[in-house]
Length: 171
Length: 196
Image (cartoon, rainbow over the protein chains, first blue to last red):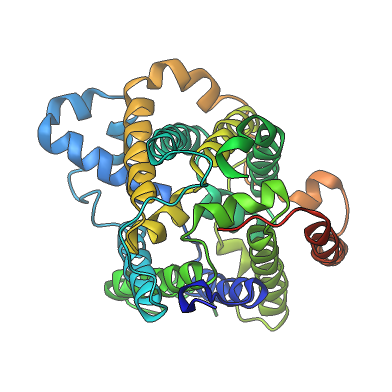
């Protein structure tokens, strides 16, 4: 078997991330996240290119303050860590390779179009729902918040229902 | 007693160093468990690979039990731990949009980052879409504002919403998770293997 296909047992990985998340709550009082850091990057980019526009925007202006730069936040550093940790794991397992991963039944082009659309929807949805799968669903469920459970059910429930219509992309 | 940073037991200067380290461990285990592959992730929706469900619920019950244990031992003050606000409509509509994004894109934001880290071009494109989506939301905010701010029930806990004691709820959650883990084995045997 190809070494690059050797993954950790998902229960082991899950329990390890569970312990990590527990430590995160113990140390910081908050959970993990991902989309929040992307939001801060978007706000910073717009703020650098068109400062007045960012300040006028009702949504973006929430995240701009004079004493704290939006990139100087916990989540941004955590996400930089995610990238580094992923790179480390991938390099140890021999998985570093530029490629478009897709089902043999579809073209790379089709895969990339759907990836872009999926990302776009996730971007919109994560802002409306105040958190993505990491910060909203996983961390939210871990603290037993109703919001976390509803978020998990609506994300995964919708994907299950819609899976039939997108089956050609995957199976 | 935790949380350490919010009570200044660890100096806030350490905050970002800790963030970087926590992120690294998170990214490492996400990638090592197979979350850098959209085809493995999508498997949960077609029954050919259940890593998402196994990983997600193992993690959730570990923390839920761990937090109760920490509180019991007097190691953490749970009233200082952040609990997500329950904005009913925004959460459901946002979740539905994210669910569509998940089945179309094959990633969620965290997993697309580890995919991008090992060179998956589809993960780069997904992340690009993510930036654009957040930008669109910001620009079109007046359009979403009504839903975004409506019906906030506050930081409610799920066992309060269901009206059952916390510890019984967590016990039930573990049983449900174990039941699902068992079911995935049966389903996976019946579903046609997908090569990826």
